[in-house]
Length: 204
Image (cartoon, helix red, strand yellow):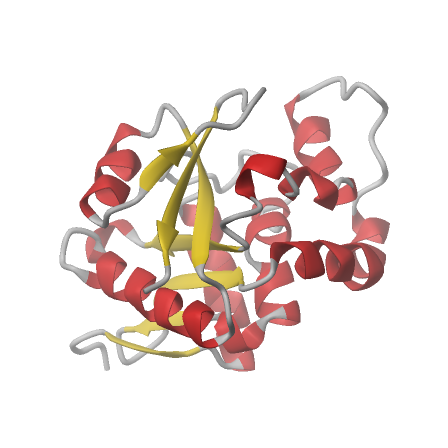
């Protein structure tokens, strides 16, 4: 029975719910179901690698029935990129053929991200070695749960030795930017960032 949501560590049984939350919030905060050839594409890029490779830094918002939000990430982006290439890519590449260079359409451009984990390594982000992804179903937004999830991750990343963290967001998502501004994130100037804005924050 659904009740007052609480934050708890991720469990393996949460994986399907995390994937569902991810795809239902993957269109700049809106529902991306049916947008790609498989609804697993966005979670395979932005949720699955984290819950599988860094489960100790994954936390969910549980409403008593299922996960309705989550925060995932890593305390060491460089090490995570190496594990993505060595462990995550072999698990998923069979589902997503390598696209041509340059990609010919939007889906190929997304799949290309799977094959280029090194895209996460930008020199301007080096002082912010941890990074996170956070998503909440719309009905659970605006109630302080997002702040609590970020604070939970900040504490865990600090405990893992990361002095600061970063995140990337679609620059056009002004609602998300306002949320991060309220949490004390500041913009990181990154060359050739395209449609992405990078934000950073100390972990303590």
